[in-house]
Length: 289
Length: 158
Ligand SMILES: Cc1cc2nc3c(=O)[nH]c(=O)nc-3n(C[C@@H](O)[C@@H](O)[C@H](O)COP(=O)(O)OP(=O)(O)OC[C@H]3O[C@@H](n4cnc5c(N)ncnc54)[C@H](O)[C@@H]3O)c2cc1C
Ligand code: FES
Ligand code: FES
Image (cartoon, rainbow over all chains, first blue to last red; front, side, top):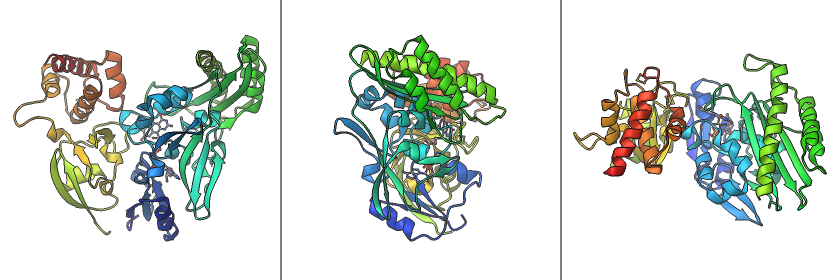
């Protein structure tokens, strides 16, 4: 790091070129709320920092094909100030709003939250529940990747050298859809999730669940999309019996670590409790939508 | 290490400085520009003592690189009073004794000012949530919250 260089890229091609030309350790910089903390504690010692914040594609929020697209480096606060996006995806916003403090959210992006690959990242479970796709740009051009395939373990992503997440697309929402994210932390603000649960539901006109996604954070090496839990809700009116079955599937899927912030038993129990609560919030939102 | 040359605006004044790519905006303010009103508590985004605004957004200056701030507009605690005249928040912090050692105070003032710009009439809960990223080891927060609410009221009636 003694020879650290800082470069701000204006275009995706420029960023790719800067990264390709560097033989040492390169870090992409978005809001820097992980990168600077990691540099401060000598966890990382990059030779080159490529700031992507000035690239227009990574900073825009727009409606697209009936759904939404937002840039990977858009700070959380900009999403929070976007009333239409917040109304469309309240569960994604539940996650974004929980990241750090006002100061942190003024910088922290969903792209950085995802690419830092912490299993406890708060915006990741609701983005997976939303079936969000990441547009990735790299030396071999662009590709579309489901968000659940980007982070593969603590601090590890499936991105190739030189690849950048440009933006996320969220699909159009059918009528009667709702999503929600809840986490458990010892402190209400500024703490790391011990468990997080995201639920996204769609109901038909009769109130029967036609589609569901249930995603768990902080109970495994990466966020888990639990198909069995979703299947327990699909085809039901999301009554108490269905929710009870869903809770069992959630607990069965947990593979948490055991540490001072939460034992395996505690995390597994809380995952079920939060899954029930998040489902009820998502249901209420779906009925109102 | 090769230094970076940056031109930017701080509290309305055009400023030029040289910094190393590893230096944060906080390092630049304190060590290069000798604007020591902005404090360092943790260096990792947890305490808010280093709060400044960057193009109007409240940020931790310890989590911004000096090299990132070219052609931006930065506001620090030094820009808060108008000459000898204190900002209502500063006066209310004194009136309510909302500080003891004072390390957290510049960050709390900058953060509170931003809150009142966005929301001139915040509830106690809104004040507490907004200031959750500003830690104070001394006061127990109650007097800070009261000072902010009182300043908000005065500014609304002004
Ligand atoms: C005090 C504090 C409290 C916090 N609280 C929470 C919390 O409650 N919940 C939570 O989930 N997180 C929390 N965080 C972490 C959170 O701020 C980060 O994970 C943030 O979302 C990362 O975004 P960023 O834009 O700051 O990323 P950066 O720090 O710029 O980057 C993060 C990582 O992703 C890479 N990267 C960034 N953008 C891209 C991209 N587009 N393509 C490819 N790679 C990329 C970087 O190279 C780096 O490795 C907290 C952080 C702090 C300092
Ligand atoms: S010094 Fe920046 S948040 Fe503590
Ligand atoms: S007055 Fe001492 S930290 Fe707040």
